[in-house]
Amino acid sequence: MNVGNIRAALADAMGLANMRVLTYVPDALNPPCAVIYPERIDYDETYDGRATAMFVVLLVASTGSQQAAQAQMDDWVSNVPDSLFAALTHDPTLGGVVESAQTLTLRNWGMQALIDGQTRYLVAEFVEEVFA
Image 1 (cartoon, rainbow, N blue to C red):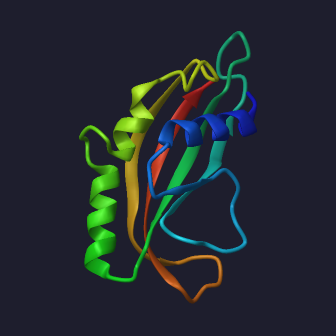
Image 2: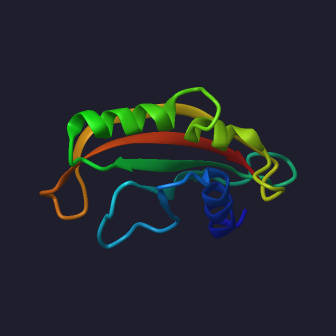
């Protein structure tokens, strides 16, 4: 399991206009953006040495207007064509990088202070389960 390749494949799958997709946690945020990072990796889950990993796709909406930020988040997470959810579920092999990947849940929707502890952003997290 190559964690960097999986983050890059998730980023490629997300390819939405007007969103920066970061495969590393940044020093500063410039929303709208998404940050991809591994949350948990369970090694040797199968007899042939495959691993199961949970990756988080942290969605960060612009907060110039709370209503606009919430509308932006609604568009990303809805189960409709052209949404981020649809993009992540389109190719379960992420271009052949993994055996399979699926979006398990959306969690932690709300206002959070990220990076500097002061600036608050509207965020939500997709949890991606990956078998590789």
